[in-house]
Length: 370
Ligand SMILES: [Fe+2]
Image (cartoon, rainbow, N blue to C red; front, top):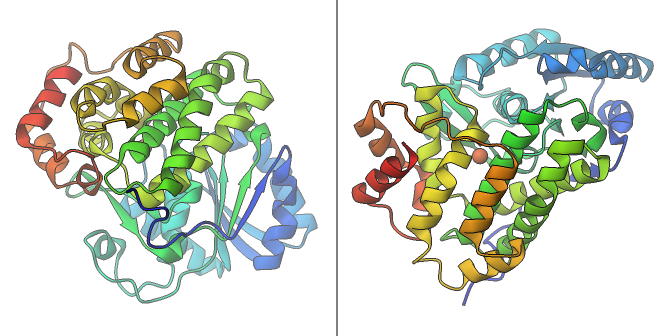
């Protein structure tokens, strides 16, 4: 029988989930420390959120160093640079306000703030002994679930690989889920990040390490995302965005305790080699992976199908069509096939796939994806 719970449950200490929850950031941050670094993306300035938050922070007596992260996904050099600036500023905490990349960067910088070795050492499995500083997560997309997890996905620019750095101390001290922050997102960001959440919920649900705890969260998230994502993308309705944000958070809790599957195993090398948004890569790998895993997931296929109101594979195809998602790989040449297969086979995500993935399976996926 499936285990009821994972060996340990680790969730962020405090979660504020409501409209305008961001207004509580200054007083909450002040209670953690009077000096903090805020890592964010360029869109925060354009939306006016940065200006409003900066002035509220000042009124609460909190000194902030705002760091606008470079575009693209975070790499090891980016972590070292945030730590360097944060130390010079004498930061007590680090917040990330943004999508998964901003959160992963802020989270790793906070967790490794006092680490003796360089970030690369911990990405290669080095043991972290030193305590970092508190991390505050404020997601502005509904997708990565990074606000709920204890790992950061970071690019190693030398090895051209995307790998996680994980540690229980990476968990956020505070999570703010405010749907108002999602209202200014471009439609395609809502779609891509929403598909990342959908794929993560699916992979967590069927994961080899799933427990009743993670399955319950993941299945509910699958249902919510399938029904809410099209409306959230089309109308940016606040209730739909709120539900997407909540579903994405639930998904983060689920996969943080179950790991993911072969989609994330293959999506990481594909994302790095082709420089395509992560959620779009995951979406392109979803149907091939459903075909591959269908025979090994048993009755779970029927349960997911019931959650989405019809045959899962057909519903996914219809959802992607409704969202206007076109595969970025179809018609493109397949480059570095051996490297992609090697990385897929040794990925920690692939290891959690319900069926063991062989070289032939990875080859099948690539034939389906391209
Ligand atoms: Fe993902």
